Image 1: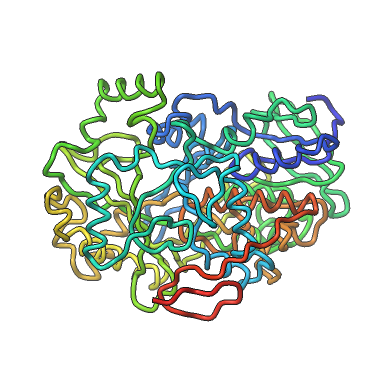
Image 2: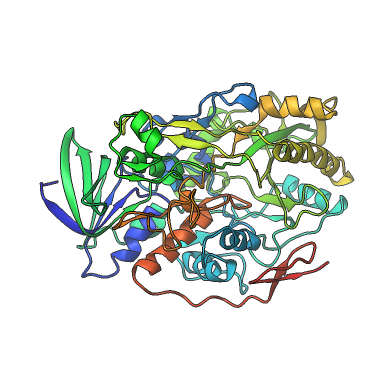
Length: 558
């Protein structure tokens, strides 16, 4: 990288959002785009093979390795917060689960101050990004870069048993939790393309990386964003142990995620004045909301022994893994082609809840995140989490040096609402798993034990056992109030030439995994930059259990 280079747009971060923005802006051959990534290539078998998802997530080469402060309400546990440090960012190390969220999540965004970010405006961009291989409806897209598949189509009978148990317990089936009806039990979809992880890098950058007007700079760290009279004019980067200054002719776009984006803003002098001064950072603009409003999903595993030897636990020894890997290398099929989360559910935690707030992922194995067996023998597990937390945390820079990780405090389970939500997770899951559809397979409960019954016992179990679902978000939220960071076009308040485009801009965390809504935000933001937009899609109704008044959608009442 030579000195005094300039580009029309400088995009920091090549993750779920940044890769998309780079691809879309560089469609105009008269526009120059620089995409800066701190990590390296995503050309690794462990990234490409869906079943190997636990490896890149736990590999230092691909992961920033953030950790939280001791979490007061989780027995002072320090929680892992893996974030992708590789082309594709966290979309290269995540679980590939494709969940948009509930339609009313996005109306909630608009109601909270995110003007225009309602479901009808967002739906066309969900459709634009995807190529759905399983379903065809008014809610699905079929010409986008991101393939949506279903793994091995629930070949293991445990998946169907889980769905049937949900129906026995009084819930309904849903064909498409991303469409008309999120609530219910059904098949789960994933970002996989013919057996290969469909990360943002794979889907958007791989086909266009040789564009003459697009430069992708890897293994380069942006140390700070540069300003002149409160206008972003470029970036300072560290590459090959040398610092360089790169200028922008139009905008700097920050897409380093809900930890990285507020951190870089703060290090660059944008944030709460008092906190920046305390950390010896020169203040460019006092913006208190930067790093506030941190939200995340927690989850834990219900684990049972399985009466039949049909689980993934028999596949985690070296020989079986080698055979799975060999088949995948030769055919891109078999167990290696799936993330194994092929059945799911969304249910309400209690009566009166407007839309589902509990999410399930079913796995036909009792396996830890590193891919090893949770115990000897055969077992299966149900990942369950409360998805609409009211606890809020913070991300704060503690040094002007970008290499010093920020202080991350999630403040998990700090509200009674969230603790109550997890009690419901335990009790409702037990009810579902007690149905006759599971009786052929369900053996001894491994965790939680059957004697974990009272509120106090459940709370203690949750504090000790719950883990992050790795969905940090909302730290640079859209809005106009004092805690917001960007406006409805994702421009940073109080400065010019700077946008944030990633999951940090969410006002509230969606009811589901974050990769899909992050990609949607990137697609829509790209059109905003290009001063064009897809017309809102008129959807007359989506499913909601109880009829309530909404501006943009009409709920179907049952």
